[in-house]
Image (cartoon, rainbow, N blue to C red):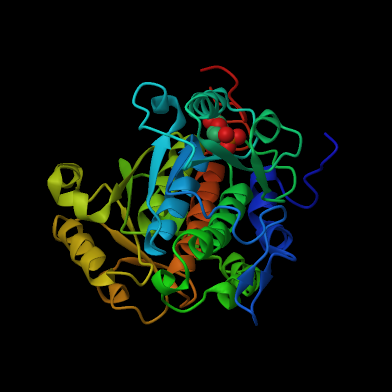
Length: 363
Ligand code: G6P
């Protein structure tokens, strides 16, 4: 392989640690904090003003990034929906020329996602792809391309491309809201300064060794649950996906409010619950985590220092106290490290998990 592992034992660990650089590359030249402006290559202001609804299509980790982007866009007043690309062909919502379909795909070659793009294009929708690969099939077939510039990713489990996708979708949310909703509806403080500081925030989390110790403490558990709310929900799904992919242990992600509607029946002292706190409705996530704690489950709070969740939690994965639109991405770094170290202790083939492929070109 042209790309080496360098000082790292696995590509996955290298790629987790590359995130400060890949994020800096992703945002370079694309934001002007002083003017509160986002510049996205070929998308001049007004390019999307005739769009009235947005649909995301994606698979796997890219689906979780799409869900993250969709929630952020809803917060900005945009009307969005998010679809698994492989379900889109059987239950596609209506599209027309005022529909923007955003296909999120690292490789740009996932057959399910390419199929959803074809179907949407046939219905007259405009297609934009958010991808890592220039010249990929998705990039060639789309009307517009937004490159995430994360650099090559070799590990089958996506890591640095997830954070780059999510950040590009936050920037795109601002571009689309400016065009479609206008300034009045966007509201809230700009997060561009926080996005510019994100690579440094990632550095800080990457220096923390707690995830490794925690991974070892809970290795004998029966199942691993991840819960979050709002932008913490896609991070819970991604945390669980990463964990099951590379450790082969059973892991599930839930919206924290759904725990009481079924999954709570599975909770025992043998099922650690990782609760993600982004700063939005944290008191509700905490109440949900407490329900699990009461049933004997160890609770590990992914939150900033001094957060009320640390009073009840059995463990703590720390993140900096940042804007709620970005906290989940830092929590995700802690969960990437957790999965990596658990899989490493179990001796799994981390970069090439059994039965999985980096890019799936069949439907
Ligand atoms: C495969 C990979 C996943 C990836 C998914 C979507 O299943 O193992 O890591 O998230 O494909 O890939 P894409 O290239 O479309 O993002």
